[in-house]
Image (cartoon, rainbow, N blue to C red; front, side):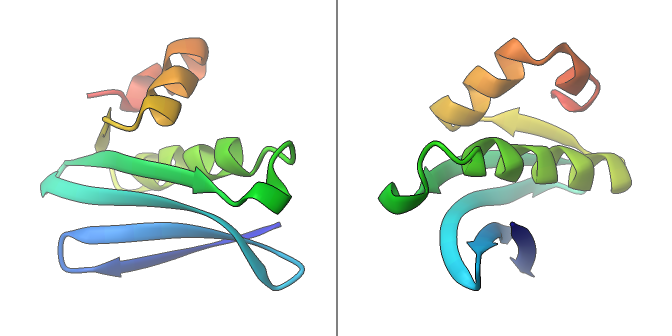
Length: 93
């Protein structure tokens, strides 16, 4: 699985690809220079059960760490991952 990050102005997407096919997407919005919200996470039906959503959230966490940023998980799926994963608390806004 490969994850690409596409960012335009204050919005961005992490796009997961499996065998060169789009498998899911995580959408985020920068709120200021050091915080972004995870607005939506979606995994396409044929890729459910492959940990695509979790991989997208992990990519967002890694991105936040590299950019010294915090995350506001507005998306219910992302919030549930943050609630379950103590290791992500360092980037939680």
